Image (cartoon, rainbow, N blue to C red):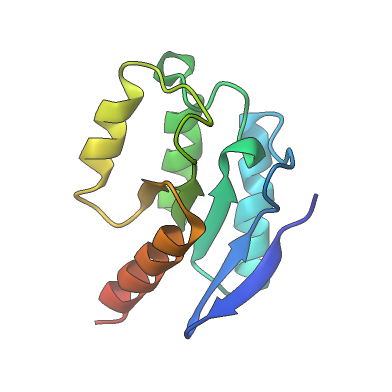
Length: 127
């Protein structure tokens, strides 16, 4: 699977394909970073299926490593995760709550909400 560049309502971001694997290890976050730099965008929209198998298990450390690397390059990540689609570890919800205070990571039930967040955080970044 490759990432594609999307322009919706003036906000540009790279997007994964729903229901397709993309990251088999945390090192694959480099592909997201490369796509963002190549296409001069600072946001990514991925689906739960695009992430590593243990991303939603906070004890694995995979989410922290991926999010930190994206943050180092000022890349915002919106993850679409429909209700019941993935089981979060007990501490993952705490991470999501904490991250809502910032503008680098969000989890959303639907693509429209994820795009709206990317637009909002993109607008805030431009101010």
